[in-house]
Length: 177
Image 1: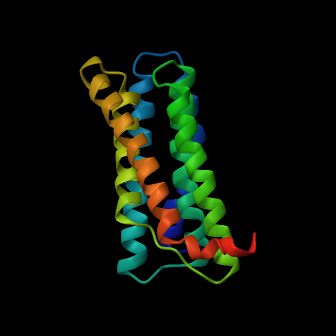
Image 2: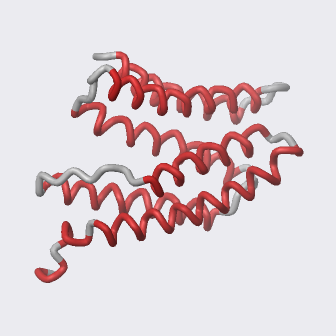
């Protein structure tokens, strides 16, 4: 397993640690959980960078990297929803978009079509990660900005999803439904 894939795998393993810390009742537990989430988020950037720079792109990485990102972000959003920090409707929009795009990618892959992430999708991901870090910290001064960023992320979740389907509509072969 190369270093990029090890970072991806580590990100998945950090999710239960992060979630556990979010529910622990000791002073600073949420800040530690936030730090773990932020570190795991950084490994997303780092594994992609290393995979491209050192030519370490693998089929495992193509599958596991986006999966690890979704697991991490969904764990944070669900935890924050349960704690009452973010509205469930926003989380539902984000998760529904992720399921739809993942399903779409599976259809494309079955036709040997690879669909690369778009700039809008990258803005979506970065805004989701930043909003989660700000909200997870539970610091009053950051909460308002985290909530604004969460709504920004919802907006880009919708826009990037629509863009994704429009640009790749031929994959669905709508004429043969």
